[in-house]
Length: 99
Image (cartoon, rainbow, N blue to C red; front, side, top):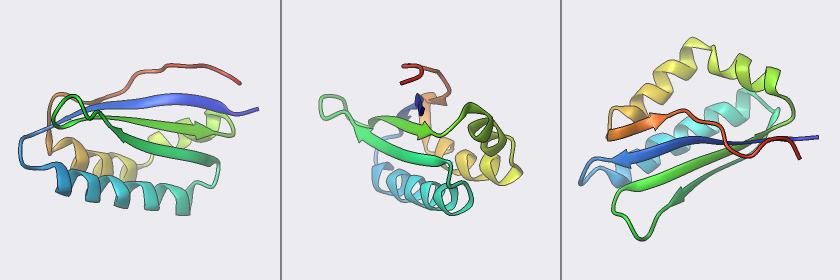
């Protein structure tokens, strides 16, 4: 059974899209290498709204996801992404539940 989460809503500052996507890819690579319980992660761009992205992840269990979020390196890496955003700034929220 996998847990599905909409893990972030991002409004990237004008002109920072490329850098944001690059930082998010680095963050994702670190996550996948160190937390194999993350089975899926995606960053989706809203083509109808400039600089607007939504990130999703799928985990084998919620405990693994929580352990990932408590790591100091998580906070530093996500902070590098957040620094390029405004408004929503990657605010955490939970969507669809267990499948």
